[in-house]
Length: 354
Image (tube, rainbow, N blue to C red; front, top):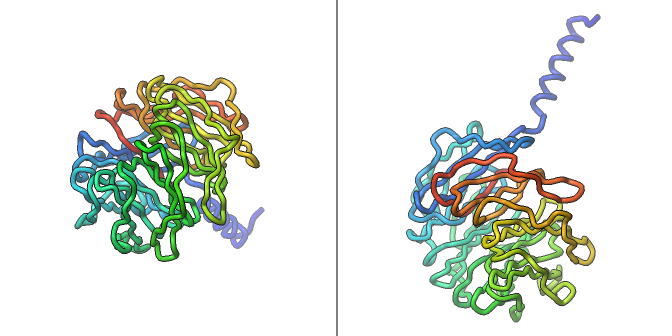
């Protein structure tokens, strides 16, 4: 039998264990350009059940495109294409609701894509119409953005960008030229060209980097292929793996890499399915996952992985929805839609908390 002191110790221990247990849910935010809003969901880590957050959807600027959660899970950034601004929202740590912090931050013309380094020090914004890159330092306490120098000119019609987790290199995709441009990132966030661009397949529209910084993936929408490049850790130079491109479904439009870097998922808008590859950690050579391609919601427009690697989330352009597909951890295969939620209008982008 426990004495009073022993009982007290047991209760304290149980309380500490409960306080240190992993959260059972995470948060997901989806941009809704037609509604000028962002929808918020609480997502169960095990079942992927979507529960709308109180007050959702939240007003943004006009035609919100990219959304991005800060690594601290305290802030959400939204690129407003028609306003040429970025909205900063504070995330309520208890319920996940959003409160906008004004004034909004000015960008170049038509900010359409954003990326952030793993440490949350810098925000990189692609301004499609003005063909520039804006760089902002992020205040860790308030989330406020401060421009780093002047916007950097890119080639005409940039469509996508990606940053290495360590924030050493930034890559920008030019759809018309079918090229990937590389930049080095200084400790202060300044961008410098890293040399000549790298050729990819026809009509590239999406790019992703594996979390181990070994490979870069580009979806070639007009060619129905994906290009896989190995990444030089010293120079940022890209080398096409096996000297060739790899087949996808029709009109690949978005990419997701599993948190482990083991699997690559490609959302094919034209064929309404997902091509899945397992990636050799040494060579980058892909092997089709058994059962690939996997059927999904009609006309997928965006795909991302959940923070635990248990699901991939898919946005449907014509189905006005967000869906979760379960990942079989040892094979990378995708199951049926475990859960889905209506967005009421066409969604554009999604970001989730860690």
